[in-house]
Amino acid sequence: MATLTLTELQTRVRQRADLALSDQFIPTSELTIYINLALSKMWDLALENDGQSFIPYTDVPFTAPTTAPNLYALPGVYKVLSVQLWDSVAGGVRRPIFPAMETQIPGLMSQQASANITFGAMYRLSGGFGLASTAGLQLQLFPPPLTNTVLYVRCVPPAPVLVNDTTPVMFPNGWEEFVVLEAAIKCIGKEDGDTRELQRQRDEMAESIRTASSSLDRGSPERVQDVVYGLVDYPWGNGGW
Image (cartoon, rainbow, N blue to C red; front, side, top):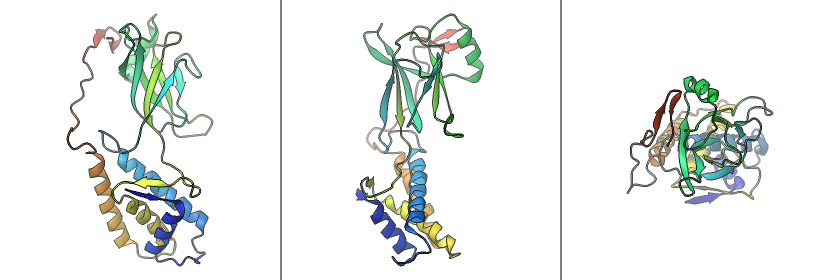
């Protein structure tokens, strides 16, 4: 494991791109942008594979919709890992619910029922791109939930954005080299330099990250997921416990 600050990453990028510390062709502010873009790209590489993730997750509980009767805003969420409803009838446990197909939504919304474990709630995700006022990730629960229904969203945040040295980043097993190479390529490319060798090294590093991120727990590999266990077929779609 390596823990690096923004300044340390900047120094390594300048060394790899053969830039003098006094070189103003790539100002520090621009170099910081390249590093953060590279971090975002590496973040996506680590999330490409299913399974146990190198990126820590968080559980976000909701007790009421945030905008519409069935629409939940998910600020600060990049990707959702699972959605669960609190089942008080079964003795206070969380029950996973599954995504709804577009063709199932009209039937789910036309029923005179509320989202709960017995009925068979489902969800749909959207958003994340567009105007800042409307593009946040959103979750729709079908049908609308009962009052005080507790919804848990297990999710991962977006990649960190480095602005100073107060938030160092921990990289497993040399992964920081991907960030260094990706940012160095952009620096050299701005000067119309030859980046082919660095691109080759970056691509090798990217493949290593993909391979490693699919096997965090070597002793207990992932299994086929049963998404229909305990479900009951309803006229308007699959659901229910």
